[in-house]
Image (cartoon, rainbow, N blue to C red):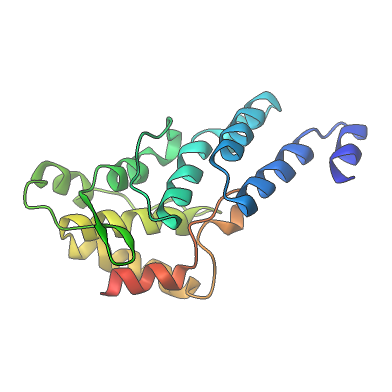
Length: 178
């Protein structure tokens, strides 16, 4: 009904955002990819640029899967790349980043990782930053992530966007504090 109302009033983005929310709730990788494509077609490239990579990163993290191949992350590339290039192993609670003594070139990139810009996905980007820092033993980056995420401990990372989710912030804080 809302999508039809949006179309009737010349706002096709309403239907796209509703589809994105459905993909979020279903945890559908194909749905996230389709939403990102539809955002481009609906004249909303600023919203869709990098969305598929960020949404898939959140989905894979929540499902305990390694990063795998991700599409272009657009403006989210520094944080997605830092997380995706971490060393991974199967742990007791899914796939976790682990310290990697052979990751010194990645360590320098992570040390230089900027704070995420403010916005609807800042907490999701902090989750990626914290997990990347954890993987390479960058305690300063982990501490920055914990400090940024702590006020949102009762929230779901990324959910402010209505288009993606990284799961409960409290769960990520528990991993970062371990």
